[in-house]
Image 1: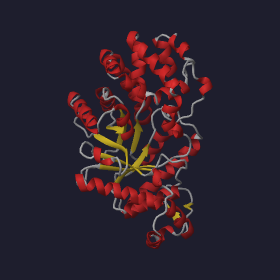
Image 2: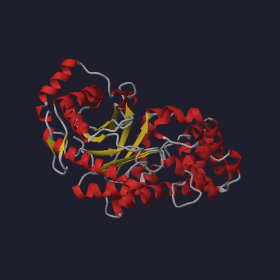
Image 3: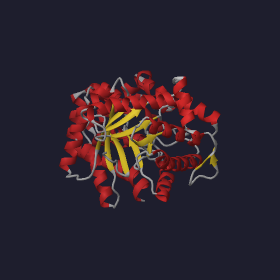
Image 4: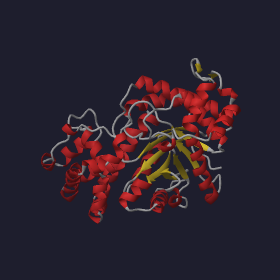
Length: 416
């Protein structure tokens, strides 16, 4: 079986032009003594909006690896796929994020539920787990309730996994089970039951992406109680270690933090936790690279700045259309969005200052940033005009992409 490295980072690239810059950040991390493997990810929704195909991500990844002579593992992720969307990704991908959040809460067959509860008598009483204070509060009724909520979703993950395995052959790809895009976080008790069910389905999951408490809005910092998140994160690490031993799951199984870009306030507690227990981590970023492209274009001035201004004007005018699909993962105060005429008066550094995630900067505007995060469709509709600007200003754009990943994400999590 392909084994996922201890540390991996999902690097989305909406327009497929920043692979070398992204990998450059990993090269710098390796030179600093930390090995992080890139996982290039792009979802079905993003491909549909930009009119690209999954094979384009493989081409970009392979080209970056060849150009930088990268000799460590790397992956191409079929991001947030389900049975309806997976087929187009099977040939090009070797990492599959099985997204079953929509199946949570759907009832499973009563006989299946009865059999699961009967099989897992060890979960019908309080469970003691090394590294946790106290016990997990489980009993037969609690087990039945949790299984009733999640068992169908895990079975759906099993169906997706088997569909891929029938084509690619088991052991030739990495499997992640994703349940993060749901309103309610999973408790440690629920995570343990989910992992027991994953093992029963014979899914060789190497990463699990639960929904954590707090808000993981796109492209901005974590919103919630950091101390509470740390307790939850540490508990989940302990549960995973227990489940690997108890249910024969892959020893490489690790937590995956989705919408993980820019969650600066929790990076230090994550770093502390994984180091103390020697755990792996998958941090998933995506749209942050697209925002660095806009920053680079704005600072380049001329046509680049004109494009950046136009993207904002158009995105604001199409607010409901662009924000609707992301309503659960953005939180924009529209009163704090600048008027397009005001933005048209900004020079490149002023535009970049409003967009760049620097909370010490008085011009930083998280509302402006979130709207542009979901506004990549506007740039996609510009077609060759936008892509030509990326080519013309490739150096400054790549500088910002690399610096963002290395200094704001990799260093606080894995180096400092």
